[in-house]
Image 1 (tube, rainbow, N blue to C red):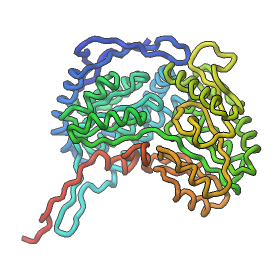
Image 2 (tube, rainbow, N blue to C red; image 1 turned 45 degrees about the horizontal axis):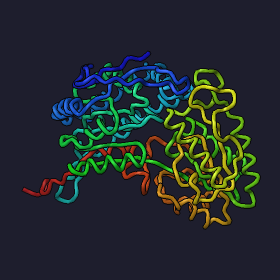
Image 3 (cartoon, one colour; image 1 turned 90 degrees about the vertical axis):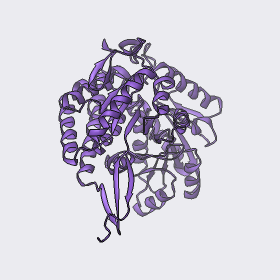
Length: 477
Protein backbone atom coordinates (compact mmCIF):
# COMPACT_ATOMS: atom_id res chain seq x y z
CA UNK A 1 0.00 0.00 0.00
CA UNK A 2 1.21 3.46 -0.92
CA UNK A 3 0.46 6.07 1.73
CA UNK A 4 0.63 9.50 0.07
CA UNK A 5 -1.68 11.56 2.25
CA UNK A 6 0.54 14.64 2.39
CA UNK A 7 0.97 17.43 -0.12
CA UNK A 8 4.24 18.93 -1.28
CA UNK A 9 4.10 22.69 -0.64
CA UNK A 10 6.96 25.18 -0.28
CA UNK A 11 9.62 22.48 -0.25
CA UNK A 12 8.03 20.34 2.48
CA UNK A 13 5.55 17.47 2.86
CA UNK A 14 2.58 18.92 4.73
CA UNK A 15 -0.77 17.65 5.99
CA UNK A 16 -3.94 18.88 4.27
CA UNK A 17 -6.01 21.62 5.86
CA UNK A 18 -8.85 19.12 6.27
CA UNK A 19 -8.29 15.36 6.27
CA UNK A 20 -10.32 13.59 3.59
CA UNK A 21 -8.86 10.31 2.39
CA UNK A 22 -9.38 8.68 -0.99
CA UNK A 23 -8.37 5.12 -1.84
CA UNK A 24 -6.62 4.56 -5.15
CA UNK A 25 -7.75 1.36 -6.86
CA UNK A 26 -5.57 -0.97 -8.91
CA UNK A 27 -7.74 -1.53 -12.01
CA UNK A 28 -6.31 -5.00 -12.62
CA UNK A 29 -7.42 -6.30 -9.20
CA UNK A 30 -10.17 -3.84 -8.20
CA UNK A 31 -8.43 -3.60 -4.83
CA UNK A 32 -7.01 -0.59 -3.06
CA UNK A 33 -3.34 0.01 -3.84
CA UNK A 34 -2.85 3.29 -2.00
CA UNK A 35 -4.41 6.26 -0.31
CA UNK A 36 -4.18 10.02 -0.88
CA UNK A 37 -5.84 13.07 0.66
CA UNK A 38 -8.31 15.21 -1.23
CA UNK A 39 -7.33 18.83 -0.94
CA UNK A 40 -9.39 21.99 -0.60
CA UNK A 41 -9.29 25.64 -1.61
CA UNK A 42 -7.29 26.32 1.57
CA UNK A 43 -4.55 23.95 0.39
CA UNK A 44 -4.55 25.63 -3.02
CA UNK A 45 -4.19 29.03 -1.36
CA UNK A 46 -1.18 27.81 0.58
CA UNK A 47 0.47 26.37 -2.52
CA UNK A 48 -0.21 29.50 -4.59
CA UNK A 49 1.34 31.73 -1.91
CA UNK A 50 4.45 29.54 -1.92
CA UNK A 51 4.66 29.61 -5.71
CA UNK A 52 4.12 33.38 -5.84
CA UNK A 53 6.91 33.99 -3.33
CA UNK A 54 9.28 31.62 -5.13
CA UNK A 55 8.55 33.23 -8.50
CA UNK A 56 10.25 36.47 -7.45
CA UNK A 57 13.66 34.80 -7.36
CA UNK A 58 13.21 31.81 -9.68
CA UNK A 59 12.03 34.00 -12.55
CA UNK A 60 15.36 35.83 -12.36
CA UNK A 61 17.56 32.74 -12.62
CA UNK A 62 19.84 32.44 -15.63
CA UNK A 63 19.40 30.09 -18.54
CA UNK A 64 22.47 28.18 -17.30
CA UNK A 65 21.02 27.74 -13.82
CA UNK A 66 17.78 26.34 -15.19
CA UNK A 67 19.64 24.07 -17.62
CA UNK A 68 21.61 22.64 -14.71
CA UNK A 69 18.37 22.07 -12.79
CA UNK A 70 16.77 20.22 -15.70
CA UNK A 71 19.88 18.07 -16.07
CA UNK A 72 19.73 17.11 -12.36
CA UNK A 73 16.07 16.19 -12.72
CA UNK A 74 16.83 14.00 -15.74
CA UNK A 75 19.58 12.16 -13.89
CA UNK A 76 17.40 11.65 -10.80
CA UNK A 77 14.46 10.39 -12.87
CA UNK A 78 16.73 7.91 -14.61
CA UNK A 79 17.83 6.58 -11.23
CA UNK A 80 14.23 6.10 -10.09
CA UNK A 81 12.78 4.91 -13.41
CA UNK A 82 11.92 1.33 -12.28
CA UNK A 83 10.03 2.53 -9.21
CA UNK A 84 8.21 5.19 -11.19
CA UNK A 85 7.08 2.61 -13.74
CA UNK A 86 5.95 0.14 -11.09
CA UNK A 87 3.76 2.76 -9.42
CA UNK A 88 2.20 3.72 -12.77
CA UNK A 89 1.43 0.07 -13.49
CA UNK A 90 -0.16 -0.36 -10.07
CA UNK A 91 -2.38 2.71 -10.26
CA UNK A 92 -3.60 2.72 -13.88
CA UNK A 93 -2.96 -0.80 -15.16
CA UNK A 94 -0.34 -0.39 -17.87
CA UNK A 95 1.74 -3.52 -18.51
CA UNK A 96 4.95 -3.19 -16.51
CA UNK A 97 7.27 -2.96 -19.51
CA UNK A 98 5.13 -0.23 -21.07
CA UNK A 99 4.89 1.58 -17.74
CA UNK A 100 8.66 1.64 -17.19
CA UNK A 101 10.05 2.12 -20.68
CA UNK A 102 7.32 4.16 -22.39
CA UNK A 103 5.17 5.78 -19.70
CA UNK A 104 7.93 6.72 -17.25
CA UNK A 105 10.49 6.96 -20.03
CA UNK A 106 8.39 9.61 -21.76
CA UNK A 107 8.72 11.79 -18.67
CA UNK A 108 12.48 11.79 -19.03
CA UNK A 109 12.08 12.45 -22.74
CA UNK A 110 10.13 15.64 -22.09
CA UNK A 111 12.77 17.01 -19.73
CA UNK A 112 15.44 16.23 -22.33
CA UNK A 113 13.36 17.95 -25.01
CA UNK A 114 12.87 21.02 -22.82
CA UNK A 115 16.58 21.13 -22.06
CA UNK A 116 17.42 20.99 -25.77
CA UNK A 117 14.96 23.76 -26.56
CA UNK A 118 16.21 25.92 -23.70
CA UNK A 119 19.82 25.76 -24.90
CA UNK A 120 19.12 27.87 -28.01
CA UNK A 121 15.85 29.61 -27.21
CA UNK A 122 15.88 33.35 -27.98
CA UNK A 123 14.39 35.17 -25.01
CA UNK A 124 15.29 38.55 -26.52
CA UNK A 125 15.41 39.79 -30.11
CA UNK A 126 15.70 43.20 -31.76
CA UNK A 127 12.92 44.62 -33.93
CA UNK A 128 14.12 47.95 -35.27
CA UNK A 129 14.55 50.22 -32.26
CA UNK A 130 12.44 47.87 -30.11
CA UNK A 131 13.58 44.98 -27.94
CA UNK A 132 11.13 42.06 -27.85
CA UNK A 133 11.49 40.12 -24.59
CA UNK A 134 9.90 36.82 -23.64
CA UNK A 135 9.47 36.52 -19.89
CA UNK A 136 8.03 33.77 -17.64
CA UNK A 137 4.28 34.13 -17.34
CA UNK A 138 4.25 33.55 -13.57
CA UNK A 139 2.46 31.07 -11.31
CA UNK A 140 1.02 28.16 -13.29
CA UNK A 141 -1.68 25.68 -12.31
CA UNK A 142 -1.14 22.33 -14.00
CA UNK A 143 -4.07 19.90 -14.19
CA UNK A 144 -3.16 16.48 -15.59
CA UNK A 145 -5.03 13.26 -16.47
CA UNK A 146 -4.62 9.59 -15.61
CA UNK A 147 -3.96 7.92 -18.96
CA UNK A 148 -0.28 8.86 -19.45
CA UNK A 149 0.30 10.40 -16.03
CA UNK A 150 4.05 11.11 -15.91
CA UNK A 151 4.19 11.92 -19.61
CA UNK A 152 1.61 14.67 -19.16
CA UNK A 153 3.03 15.90 -15.87
CA UNK A 154 6.52 16.18 -17.34
CA UNK A 155 5.45 17.88 -20.57
CA UNK A 156 4.02 20.70 -18.44
CA UNK A 157 6.49 20.88 -15.55
CA UNK A 158 9.59 20.74 -17.76
CA UNK A 159 8.84 23.83 -19.91
CA UNK A 160 7.48 25.70 -16.90
CA UNK A 161 10.75 25.24 -15.01
CA UNK A 162 12.80 25.85 -18.16
CA UNK A 163 11.23 29.28 -18.61
CA UNK A 164 11.40 30.35 -14.96
CA UNK A 165 7.79 29.76 -13.92
CA UNK A 166 6.60 28.25 -10.64
CA UNK A 167 3.85 25.64 -10.51
CA UNK A 168 1.10 23.94 -8.58
CA UNK A 169 0.34 20.46 -9.90
CA UNK A 170 -3.04 18.79 -9.48
CA UNK A 171 -2.73 15.25 -10.83
CA UNK A 172 -5.76 13.10 -11.56
CA UNK A 173 -7.17 11.49 -8.44
CA UNK A 174 -7.54 8.27 -10.46
CA UNK A 175 -3.75 7.90 -10.90
CA UNK A 176 -2.06 10.31 -8.47
CA UNK A 177 0.57 8.07 -6.92
CA UNK A 178 3.31 8.55 -9.50
CA UNK A 179 2.98 12.31 -9.05
CA UNK A 180 4.16 11.86 -5.46
CA UNK A 181 7.15 9.84 -6.59
CA UNK A 182 7.82 12.58 -9.13
CA UNK A 183 7.68 15.21 -6.36
CA UNK A 184 10.22 13.19 -4.37
CA UNK A 185 12.45 13.12 -7.45
CA UNK A 186 12.27 16.89 -7.85
CA UNK A 187 13.01 17.36 -4.16
CA UNK A 188 16.06 15.10 -4.46
CA UNK A 189 17.18 16.99 -7.59
CA UNK A 190 17.23 20.24 -5.63
CA UNK A 191 14.29 22.17 -7.05
CA UNK A 192 14.10 25.35 -4.91
CA UNK A 193 11.29 25.45 -2.37
CA UNK A 194 8.03 26.83 -3.65
CA UNK A 195 8.97 26.36 -7.31
CA UNK A 196 7.10 23.03 -7.55
CA UNK A 197 4.05 22.30 -5.41
CA UNK A 198 1.66 19.32 -5.41
CA UNK A 199 -1.93 19.32 -4.18
CA UNK A 200 -4.17 16.31 -4.74
CA UNK A 201 -7.89 16.66 -5.22
CA UNK A 202 -10.82 16.40 -7.56
CA UNK A 203 -11.67 18.73 -10.41
CA UNK A 204 -14.69 20.51 -8.89
CA UNK A 205 -12.71 21.37 -5.75
CA UNK A 206 -8.95 21.72 -6.31
CA UNK A 207 -9.11 22.05 -10.09
CA UNK A 208 -11.65 24.86 -9.96
CA UNK A 209 -9.85 26.56 -7.05
CA UNK A 210 -6.70 26.70 -9.19
CA UNK A 211 -8.56 27.94 -12.26
CA UNK A 212 -10.39 30.59 -10.23
CA UNK A 213 -7.44 31.80 -8.15
CA UNK A 214 -6.51 35.43 -8.90
CA UNK A 215 -2.81 34.81 -8.20
CA UNK A 216 -2.55 31.98 -10.73
CA UNK A 217 -1.42 33.44 -14.05
CA UNK A 218 -1.94 30.41 -16.27
CA UNK A 219 -3.76 27.09 -16.32
CA UNK A 220 -2.37 24.25 -18.41
CA UNK A 221 -5.02 21.53 -18.64
CA UNK A 222 -5.06 18.10 -20.25
CA UNK A 223 -8.25 16.04 -20.10
CA UNK A 224 -11.68 15.68 -21.62
CA UNK A 225 -13.21 18.41 -23.71
CA UNK A 226 -16.14 18.62 -21.28
CA UNK A 227 -13.84 19.27 -18.31
CA UNK A 228 -11.68 21.65 -20.35
CA UNK A 229 -14.70 23.81 -21.14
CA UNK A 230 -15.54 24.04 -17.44
CA UNK A 231 -11.96 24.99 -16.53
CA UNK A 232 -11.97 27.73 -19.17
CA UNK A 233 -15.27 29.14 -17.92
CA UNK A 234 -14.04 29.28 -14.32
CA UNK A 235 -10.71 30.83 -15.38
CA UNK A 236 -12.38 33.50 -17.53
CA UNK A 237 -13.24 35.77 -14.59
CA UNK A 238 -9.54 36.41 -13.92
CA UNK A 239 -8.57 36.57 -17.62
CA UNK A 240 -5.67 34.15 -17.14
CA UNK A 241 -4.13 32.18 -19.96
CA UNK A 242 -5.69 28.75 -20.43
CA UNK A 243 -3.77 26.22 -22.51
CA UNK A 244 -5.72 23.05 -23.26
CA UNK A 245 -5.02 19.64 -24.73
CA UNK A 246 -8.36 17.87 -24.95
CA UNK A 247 -10.08 14.98 -26.68
CA UNK A 248 -9.70 13.42 -30.10
CA UNK A 249 -11.34 11.17 -32.65
CA UNK A 250 -8.51 10.93 -35.12
CA UNK A 251 -8.93 9.57 -38.63
CA UNK A 252 -6.46 7.18 -40.23
CA UNK A 253 -6.74 7.37 -44.03
CA UNK A 254 -5.46 4.27 -45.83
CA UNK A 255 -5.03 5.29 -49.46
CA UNK A 256 -5.51 2.74 -52.23
CA UNK A 257 -1.79 2.56 -53.07
CA UNK A 258 -0.66 1.84 -49.49
CA UNK A 259 0.93 -1.41 -48.35
CA UNK A 260 -2.40 -2.64 -46.93
CA UNK A 261 -1.10 -5.18 -44.44
CA UNK A 262 1.52 -2.83 -42.99
CA UNK A 263 -0.89 0.12 -42.88
CA UNK A 264 -3.66 -1.82 -41.14
CA UNK A 265 -1.27 -3.26 -38.57
CA UNK A 266 0.19 0.19 -38.00
CA UNK A 267 -3.33 1.51 -37.42
CA UNK A 268 -4.60 -1.23 -35.11
CA UNK A 269 -1.64 -1.40 -32.72
CA UNK A 270 -2.01 2.16 -31.31
CA UNK A 271 -5.60 1.29 -30.39
CA UNK A 272 -4.35 -1.55 -28.20
CA UNK A 273 -1.28 0.06 -26.61
CA UNK A 274 -2.24 1.56 -23.26
CA UNK A 275 -5.68 -0.07 -23.71
CA UNK A 276 -6.59 2.57 -26.28
CA UNK A 277 -6.40 5.32 -23.65
CA UNK A 278 -4.60 7.87 -25.81
CA UNK A 279 -6.18 11.13 -26.94
CA UNK A 280 -4.37 10.99 -30.29
CA UNK A 281 -5.22 7.35 -31.07
CA UNK A 282 -6.22 6.65 -34.71
CA UNK A 283 -9.70 5.48 -33.72
CA UNK A 284 -11.41 5.92 -37.12
CA UNK A 285 -9.81 3.85 -39.90
CA UNK A 286 -10.87 4.97 -43.38
CA UNK A 287 -10.36 2.34 -46.09
CA UNK A 288 -11.04 2.34 -49.87
CA UNK A 289 -14.22 0.36 -50.57
CA UNK A 290 -12.53 -2.18 -52.93
CA UNK A 291 -9.99 -3.06 -50.20
CA UNK A 292 -12.43 -2.96 -47.32
CA UNK A 293 -13.09 -6.67 -46.75
CA UNK A 294 -9.39 -7.49 -46.78
CA UNK A 295 -8.68 -4.62 -44.38
CA UNK A 296 -11.32 -5.91 -41.97
CA UNK A 297 -9.76 -9.38 -42.06
CA UNK A 298 -6.26 -8.04 -41.31
CA UNK A 299 -7.51 -5.80 -38.50
CA UNK A 300 -9.36 -8.71 -36.91
CA UNK A 301 -6.26 -10.92 -36.95
CA UNK A 302 -4.11 -8.24 -35.31
CA UNK A 303 -6.65 -7.56 -32.56
CA UNK A 304 -7.13 -11.24 -31.79
CA UNK A 305 -3.40 -11.75 -31.20
CA UNK A 306 -3.51 -9.28 -28.30
CA UNK A 307 -2.68 -10.81 -24.91
CA UNK A 308 -4.97 -9.19 -22.34
CA UNK A 309 -4.25 -9.84 -18.67
CA UNK A 310 -2.21 -9.19 -15.55
CA UNK A 311 0.00 -6.12 -16.16
CA UNK A 312 2.81 -7.74 -14.17
CA UNK A 313 2.73 -11.03 -16.11
CA UNK A 314 5.31 -11.75 -18.80
CA UNK A 315 3.79 -11.64 -22.27
CA UNK A 316 0.86 -9.37 -21.44
CA UNK A 317 0.44 -6.75 -24.16
CA UNK A 318 -2.72 -5.03 -22.89
CA UNK A 319 -3.83 -4.38 -19.35
CA UNK A 320 -7.13 -3.05 -18.02
CA UNK A 321 -8.59 0.39 -18.53
CA UNK A 322 -7.93 2.74 -15.64
CA UNK A 323 -11.18 2.74 -13.68
CA UNK A 324 -14.69 1.37 -13.31
CA UNK A 325 -16.06 4.65 -14.61
CA UNK A 326 -14.01 4.24 -17.77
CA UNK A 327 -14.90 0.55 -18.08
CA UNK A 328 -18.62 1.27 -17.82
CA UNK A 329 -18.41 4.10 -20.37
CA UNK A 330 -16.63 1.88 -22.89
CA UNK A 331 -19.09 -0.97 -22.37
CA UNK A 332 -21.99 1.41 -22.99
CA UNK A 333 -20.47 2.70 -26.21
CA UNK A 334 -19.71 -0.81 -27.49
CA UNK A 335 -23.35 -1.73 -26.95
CA UNK A 336 -24.40 1.52 -28.62
CA UNK A 337 -22.40 0.53 -31.68
CA UNK A 338 -24.18 -2.81 -31.86
CA UNK A 339 -27.58 -1.18 -31.34
CA UNK A 340 -26.95 1.37 -34.12
CA UNK A 341 -26.17 -1.37 -36.63
CA UNK A 342 -22.38 -1.53 -36.84
CA UNK A 343 -20.97 -4.99 -37.55
CA UNK A 344 -19.03 -6.42 -34.60
CA UNK A 345 -15.93 -8.04 -36.12
CA UNK A 346 -14.23 -9.09 -32.90
CA UNK A 347 -14.42 -8.31 -29.21
CA UNK A 348 -17.64 -6.85 -27.88
CA UNK A 349 -19.20 -6.31 -24.46
CA UNK A 350 -17.80 -7.75 -21.25
CA UNK A 351 -14.39 -8.91 -20.11
CA UNK A 352 -12.29 -11.46 -21.99
CA UNK A 353 -13.60 -14.92 -21.08
CA UNK A 354 -10.69 -15.96 -18.87
CA UNK A 355 -10.77 -12.80 -16.74
CA UNK A 356 -13.35 -12.50 -13.96
CA UNK A 357 -11.93 -9.51 -12.10
CA UNK A 358 -10.46 -6.17 -13.15
CA UNK A 359 -11.51 -3.54 -15.66
CA UNK A 360 -10.39 -5.50 -18.71
CA UNK A 361 -11.99 -4.70 -22.07
CA UNK A 362 -12.06 -6.97 -25.09
CA UNK A 363 -10.06 -5.56 -28.04
CA UNK A 364 -13.01 -4.58 -30.23
CA UNK A 365 -13.32 -3.82 -33.93
CA UNK A 366 -16.44 -2.58 -35.69
CA UNK A 367 -16.98 -2.63 -39.46
CA UNK A 368 -19.68 -1.15 -41.68
CA UNK A 369 -19.60 2.02 -39.62
CA UNK A 370 -20.93 5.31 -40.91
CA UNK A 371 -19.42 8.56 -39.70
CA UNK A 372 -22.77 9.57 -38.19
CA UNK A 373 -22.81 6.67 -35.71
CA UNK A 374 -22.09 7.39 -32.05
CA UNK A 375 -18.97 5.20 -32.06
CA UNK A 376 -17.58 7.32 -34.92
CA UNK A 377 -18.42 10.63 -33.22
CA UNK A 378 -17.59 10.18 -29.54
CA UNK A 379 -14.16 9.62 -28.02
CA UNK A 380 -14.42 6.09 -26.60
CA UNK A 381 -10.97 6.13 -24.98
CA UNK A 382 -10.62 2.38 -25.02
CA UNK A 383 -9.44 -0.45 -27.32
CA UNK A 384 -12.24 0.07 -29.82
CA UNK A 385 -11.54 0.70 -33.52
CA UNK A 386 -14.13 1.58 -36.17
CA UNK A 387 -13.60 0.92 -39.89
CA UNK A 388 -15.33 3.21 -42.39
CA UNK A 389 -15.29 2.63 -46.17
CA UNK A 390 -14.86 5.48 -48.67
CA UNK A 391 -15.13 5.82 -52.44
CA UNK A 392 -12.40 8.31 -53.34
CA UNK A 393 -9.73 10.52 -51.84
CA UNK A 394 -11.99 13.56 -51.60
CA UNK A 395 -14.59 11.60 -49.62
CA UNK A 396 -11.88 10.29 -47.28
CA UNK A 397 -10.73 13.84 -46.49
CA UNK A 398 -14.33 14.97 -45.99
CA UNK A 399 -15.05 12.12 -43.55
CA UNK A 400 -11.77 12.70 -41.71
CA UNK A 401 -12.58 16.39 -41.16
CA UNK A 402 -16.22 15.72 -40.24
CA UNK A 403 -15.65 15.79 -36.48
CA UNK A 404 -15.67 18.34 -33.67
CA UNK A 405 -12.14 17.21 -32.84
CA UNK A 406 -8.83 17.93 -34.53
CA UNK A 407 -5.99 16.48 -32.50
CA UNK A 408 -4.26 14.11 -34.92
CA UNK A 409 -4.56 12.51 -38.32
CA UNK A 410 -2.86 9.62 -40.09
CA UNK A 411 -2.20 8.98 -43.81
CA UNK A 412 -0.75 5.86 -45.45
CA UNK A 413 0.40 5.82 -49.08
CA UNK A 414 3.28 4.46 -51.14
CA UNK A 415 3.41 7.87 -52.86
CA UNK A 416 4.93 10.34 -50.40
CA UNK A 417 3.82 13.39 -52.39
CA UNK A 418 0.25 12.11 -52.40
CA UNK A 419 0.39 11.50 -48.66
CA UNK A 420 1.71 15.03 -48.13
CA UNK A 421 -1.11 16.46 -50.24
CA UNK A 422 -3.75 14.67 -48.18
CA UNK A 423 -2.00 15.62 -44.92
CA UNK A 424 -2.24 19.31 -45.84
CA UNK A 425 -6.01 19.00 -46.16
CA UNK A 426 -6.60 17.48 -42.72
CA UNK A 427 -7.80 19.89 -40.03
CA UNK A 428 -5.74 18.54 -37.16
CA UNK A 429 -2.69 19.59 -35.19
CA UNK A 430 -0.50 16.54 -35.84
CA UNK A 431 -0.41 14.38 -38.96
CA UNK A 432 1.49 11.07 -39.08
CA UNK A 433 2.56 9.89 -42.53
CA UNK A 434 3.15 6.17 -43.04
CA UNK A 435 3.35 5.34 -39.34
CA UNK A 436 5.78 8.11 -38.38
CA UNK A 437 6.27 8.10 -34.62
CA UNK A 438 5.89 10.91 -32.10
CA UNK A 439 8.64 13.54 -32.11
CA UNK A 440 9.06 15.10 -28.66
CA UNK A 441 10.71 18.17 -30.15
CA UNK A 442 7.67 18.84 -32.37
CA UNK A 443 4.53 20.66 -31.17
CA UNK A 444 1.74 18.53 -29.68
CA UNK A 445 -1.81 19.90 -29.73
CA UNK A 446 -4.97 20.16 -31.75
CA UNK A 447 -7.54 22.17 -33.68
CA UNK A 448 -11.21 22.75 -32.84
CA UNK A 449 -12.47 21.05 -29.66
CA UNK A 450 -9.16 19.22 -29.23
CA UNK A 451 -7.68 22.29 -27.58
CA UNK A 452 -6.02 25.63 -28.09
CA UNK A 453 -2.39 25.30 -27.00
CA UNK A 454 0.79 23.51 -27.97
CA UNK A 455 3.10 21.43 -25.81
CA UNK A 456 6.51 19.77 -26.23
CA UNK A 457 9.84 21.17 -27.35
CA UNK A 458 10.27 24.78 -28.42
CA UNK A 459 6.53 25.41 -28.79
CA UNK A 460 6.02 24.09 -25.28
CA UNK A 461 8.35 26.73 -23.91
CA UNK A 462 6.43 29.48 -25.68
CA UNK A 463 3.22 28.54 -23.86
CA UNK A 464 4.76 29.59 -20.54
CA UNK A 465 6.08 32.96 -21.71
CA UNK A 466 4.67 36.46 -21.95
CA UNK A 467 5.88 38.83 -24.69
CA UNK A 468 7.06 42.34 -23.81
CA UNK A 469 7.96 45.10 -26.26
CA UNK A 470 10.57 47.56 -24.92
CA UNK A 471 10.19 50.46 -27.35
CA UNK A 472 13.18 52.74 -27.83
CA UNK A 473 15.56 50.20 -26.37
CA UNK A 474 17.91 50.54 -29.34
CA UNK A 475 17.28 54.23 -29.99
CA UNK A 476 20.34 56.35 -30.60
CA UNK A 477 21.41 58.58 -27.69
